[in-house]
Image (cartoon, rainbow, N blue to C red; front, side, top):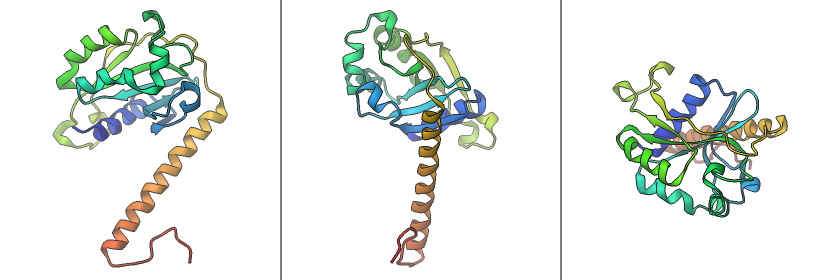
Length: 194
């Protein structure tokens, strides 16, 4: 299972299983607030407008490297273990999502490096495909601690996140349409005025 497959499964989990009204991937919503330029793998905003951050990791070495990201470096280096990750984080909860095959090692890494983080274990969809939302197999194996200082985001920020998701979807649809047009020999791509 690739990281992109896992991001799709985790997005479906937050949206359709946990009923979060706003879910996006690769969001930069927290960019200015967290002091970094690394987007959040999966961001969910619950009904009370609290942010839930999920970082998708497909290897233990990648999970250990998370501490080196700019968005965490100055926070986690100064944080007490009970303040994971630290002040200025906009998320109320922080999770790692890993494939089932590395979940035991991931638990150890969380206890060693990321006290307070939650752990989602993602299993391969039955028969390798999604046929219904019931085929989403995500299990919470470590419940996260509530992060200190987390406040709900504004409705305007939630609307901005929704707008970004719609723009990403529209951009992806135009890219797919252009790829089909190019395969058919049509030279003028969609979205270009002449």
